[in-house]
Image 1 (tube, one colour):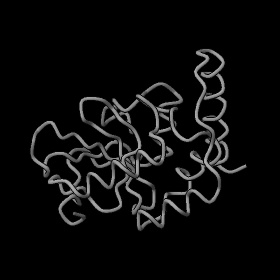
Image 2 (spheres, helix red, strand yellow):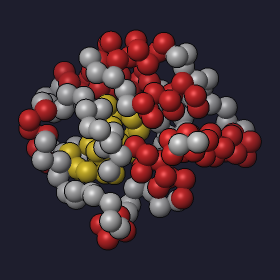
Image 3 (spheres, one colour):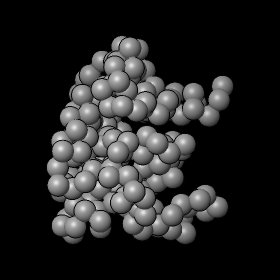
Length: 173
């Protein structure tokens, strides 16, 4: 079993435990073709791990902070962002509402499915994008082990992680 399959099993087990504990049912997983339809609408493919979460676990409602957005809502948020004055970057899909206008977003154009933080509160689009996690898998592992997205720079160990503002923002709008 590869690392992705292990992670999917761990996420699924955590979600099942949460449903048993809290009794809050989750949406059904999406049908396999939904990922392809989403890619067609967005103009880019979902990272394989994200597509697997939506088609094998549930259509949102689980995960870090307030949980993954349902895929249709994530797409609607992306389209609204692209049409806004914020200059939402191409290929950056919001996947989780973090509260206070902030979103965890996956960079669908990066090989690792890097996670970015959209934090609009400074009021300047150029100051609204930060590195959140080196990849979707890292972000999910942090959720599973309870470290959340509040890791300090030294806690990343040997993993490559740029801190601070996301420099690619202006080239992707």
